[in-house]
Length: 187
Figure: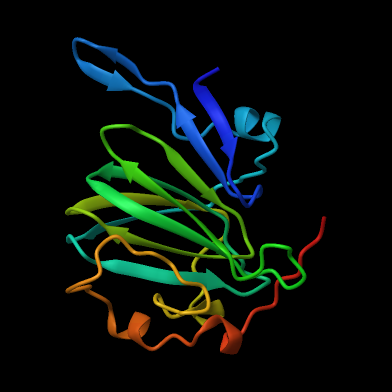
């Protein structure tokens, strides 16, 4: 199997995935996604779009999500650099509603962060970083929504607190209690 582990986090629908890395004299090889292995581990991902971004140290991107029927699951990894990645549960009726899980992802220790639909996602670049997002539905501007990155009700403990860099759009998202969501918890 090309994946060392599929670790369910404190909110069990969010999964941290550790791939097997095969180094040799040329460098290394690893698989980022293999449907049969993901599905065998209860992570039902079908990728339809791949995005890449570069962020300078201190940048916060998020907290983003798309409404149904264009909800996106995101398989996220760092190609170069180091980031603090966050998933916030926005599924009404969930025992974890409004709670978040976070991981530090570092390109020197390859891992993937699975954030299913029904979660707002964001990250902070801890150093200049290049990241990949493999997503389950295409980007849809009319379904795009967000939550303000520093919502006090969520209380994310961002590692870099001074000189945070945000897009104009990300500065204007509402707090979760005012955000439009159409996700329900089904378990």
